[in-house]
Length: 229
Image (cartoon, rainbow, N blue to C red; front, side):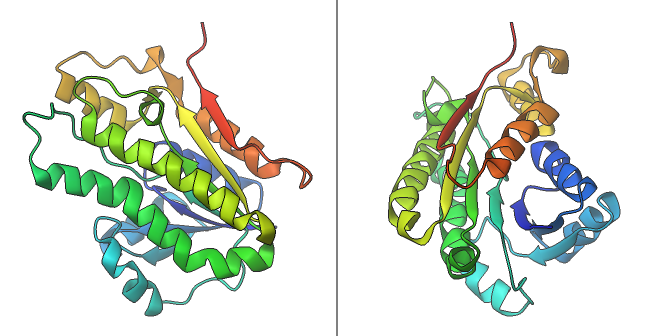
């Protein structure tokens, strides 16, 4: 039985992944933005435990965790949470840049930093659920894509730094996935949302589990997932 700390367990890919980990007998610790959200996640995912930390305020994560009991062992940290607000460079205000960079990039860096001592002991794994936008930026996606390009850089640097400690680092790059976030993106784009056109959250969860379950003599560093033909 392993222990996994996961962000974004309240919906979409994170919720499916957390449920599958619990179903196979692993322990799951979900990071929630506040106590109310923590209670909702516990109700939705029986067996999960929670930590409260607001990813939108990375500078407060260390303080928040210091007031709570962290697991003695963590085998993986799974960064699934993310936010997106579309807009052109000409139109996006600083607040939307700052929010997306905070949640999508700075918070994963800070949470990883704080948990690295435990991960080194377990020779654990860090998984960053990135995006196709982390490889290619399109018009209207500047802030989100910048945060995800930065997340790839974070993962690449972390992998090189932590190899000597036996910590594996994986980036997953899903294409458009049928999640509440995707529905919100379609609202911003002004287009109809048809979930059947996109990758299922379960399929992305399967790729993450594949990376986690790979024998220790190998690691998946980067994995791109695209819709089937």
